[in-house]
Amino acid sequence: MMRKLLAAIGLAAALGLAGCGGQGDESKTLNFSILSAEDQLSMAKVWQPLLDDMQKQTGLKVKAFYASNYTSLIEAMRFNQVQVGWFSALPTLEAVNRADGEVLGRIIDADGAASSYQSVMIVRKGSGISLDDVLKCGKRYNFGIGDARSTSGTLAPMAYVFIPHNIDPQTCFKLVRSASHQANLFAVANGVVDVATNNSVGLVFAKREYPAIVDKIQVIWTSPPLPESSIVVRQDLDPAVKAKLKTFFLTYGTAPGPEGDHERRVLKALTYGGFRPADASYLDPIRQMDAGQTLYEAKTSGDAQKIAAAQKAYDAVMAGIAAHGPPAK
Image 1 (spheres, rainbow, N blue to C red):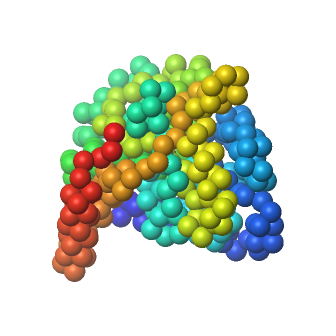
Image 2 (cartoon, one colour):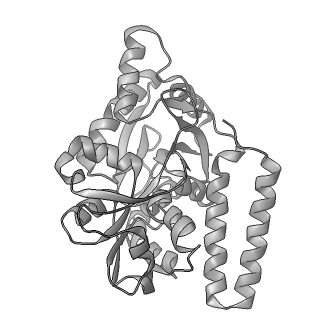
């Protein structure tokens, strides 16, 4: 099914990371992972000032670790090649489940509220393609989907568009290609693909860096709000180091005067307001969508054992969500 096909794309890169060298400098250097969903130069421009401040305030040596897909970043954390990183919600869940990850804090907006963003579906402006046209399938269009573990690029479109309409993108479209948000944006703008996924934050970044490209596209679908990104650390990180990182993130941008003004400018460039602790309910919408997609894939397989196992897992996720209570605001 769709998820297995897409996961294979990231797995090759992940295996390459897993086979890379040892951990000789890890006690001296803290590797911070960042998904280069946009081009690495653009991401470095907005993230490096925060990493510089982290190094200055914590006394730790901090090195950026960029990768083009989440599977690589999750595997890098699993093999302790990175110790802390920025992950969107679905990769956060996978890092917690598979890579000894622990959520240090989540993104908040400028007003101090829990921040959210939206998945979008885009077409070239003037193409006349509507969401209804997309849902008719018939292998008429080339489709650009996101990273296999991308919340907005894959999980949300599957959960909110394709699964409710009982559509498998592989049989719906003439061609399905998986790429980063930026690559999909350029592909739509230049007519390489007809329809693609993206997200509201990615479009803000792109509008700032590539306004002429963004002017060529049109949004035809917007998802409900999705939980924003979080900062994830390895659970086995030195407690003293973890405490320094937690203090840094949860106080960043709150200081008065010139220091705080500088930090708030750094956050604004990232389109963030700051960070706050995350409770168990933070990832609940992602748990539900992920379990729902697994159940859908099991049902479409027709395998009774897979269906029973997926239904049991889905019921367990829903019971856990109910136990958590309403999400924290």
